Length: 168
Image (cartoon, rainbow, N blue to C red; front, side):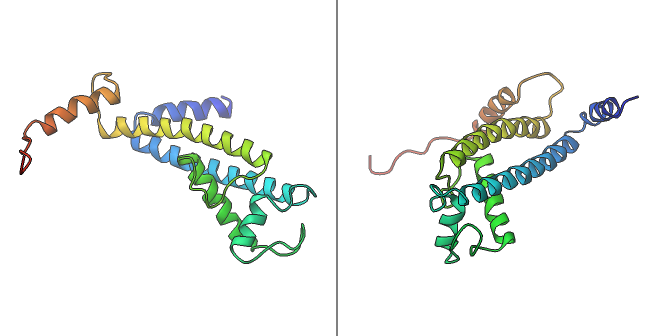
């Protein structure tokens, strides 16, 4: 049996356990974030060697903001660990939302990468939400998780009464 078939059968066996699938998704998300942060760093380094965009790339802007500026394409800047942490921070904030703006894309290559990151993150986060909904709202029927949530909310809010507005 080829290794891929073996892994597929094992994953199919474990797919019945939502917690295992959620853990697997989180591990894959962390790996995806690591790869994408490495790509983000490589884009920043490549932009720093370009004579036209060296001073507008994300690495140069980050260095100026943290008072560790790049003096040329190879001298100055933050440590490799600090740069990786900033890169991972940007990637995670872009994968899970649209980012916060403190580390941002300035050049065309950085903007293209950011758009791809947000698209990938939206797709991946949607899959994680579906697995989490199946785990939180286990149903014997094949009811969609959103339908389960909508049927759950009226039961929860049924006992509440609207209080009158004072002074009106």
